[in-house]
Length: 266
Image 1: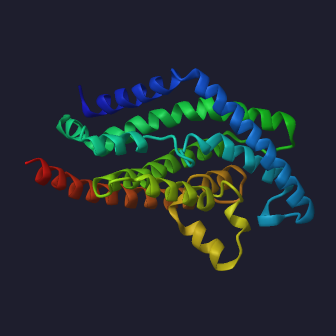
Image 2: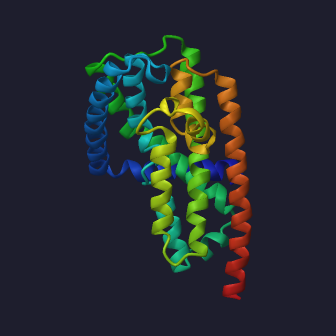
Image 3: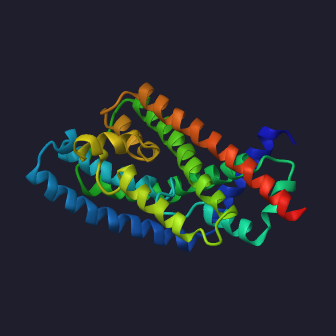
């Protein structure tokens, strides 16, 4: 089997694996919808007091909320990705089996995580977004090209998300318990991705700082492309640069971790 076919099969396996968790998916759809409703009403109150906050019309702000709910599970901003499983395999030593596979460790988990993300986007993202569009005034583009650019931005954001979480998972090679690192990554993800509040709302230097961090690629970037607040090509370039940097950093850490496994295992 060629390398491309191998990783495509791994991605398809990741999709099928999460598709079997029907009860969990239904519960996730319900949770995303309820949280979206709560957040929308908070946004409506805020935008009533501060129209054009962050450069968004009220309908755009509502759209932003439901985009966040659609991407929350797919980008694993609050957890639920591959990182817990990989950290457990590192802790138990089962990662040694993974290293013997005729496949690259990083690409294997990237393919599996993209398969998971594709299911979460369809299984947990579409329904809450559709509910939000039915219940509230939202602003959506009519041009197919904008939707295509948005999907490209989403895919690049998913790769950036993987790059962050892969580094988090590899920390288990050096830490006895990676729970603290995972929780710090969740907090950073919620705050710096714009999940709680659009990053355009943050003032001055704080706003510039959070928009320059990789987490802004997960939600803020795709949302601004869809809402017409950012040009597609500069957004793609920003996301791609972070994706390359994070994957390269993951490759370096993986190499150091592999040497650690060899030294400890003989």
